[in-house]
Length: 312
Image (cartoon, rainbow, N blue to C red):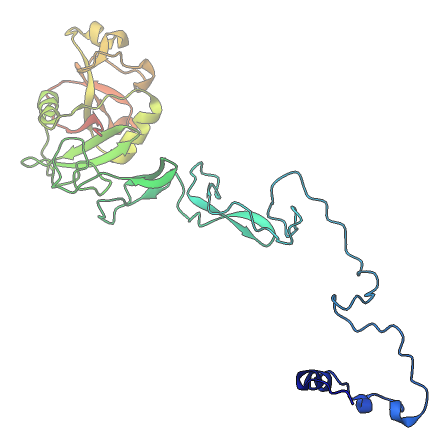
């Protein structure tokens, strides 16, 4: 009787299949063996038929880069992932790129462009709580162009104390004279008064203005004349009009009158009716004529108005 080597017996036993767990009668039941046929066991290694893939929409890549629109423009299953953001932008239309781009709600927006706009007033590096500076674009950044550094106010047509007012009291006050500044365009005027009953001659008033770095006011047109008289208030006010003619006929001739020290001609329309009448060689804003010009002797005692150009 032939004998199998022990190792082969063990291997054969290990390969034996217990069919008792399969459905239907087993091989020992004496019935026919069920033909299981081809089975789809699933999995891609099983070789089964999974049927057609589900319908997928066709994606056509856009020739342009990805934009902020909530759509997968480049068909890479990412939406708005390559949109350029955080770039300088102008959100308020002031010409300064002080905002930053962002992709928000399927749209590219300019954010962080604050309420400050180029041209608006601001308080800059001096931090004096006085907005005498102006917002301006420097290297595409909005900055407050304000370099006013506080110092005591002097009478020099400058704003040393950074309060937006030029030569305010007591900077230009001398002796009994009290001078109040008013501004019109690029000019600053000092309306100077003395106590009731006081005043200066035309020559003294001219000297008082000169000591302050000013000249007696030069009135160029009726609008300036009327504005100046309203600011000064009722009274008699020396201004810079004068003639060198000593005779009455010469003083009555409007063509002989000039502004001192500029030498510019006095506009004939500034005079009151029938003035100059030849009464004197110096002109003033006359209360009796509603602030229109009148000629009078230069020795009369009046308050006075100085004028100067604002110094940056």
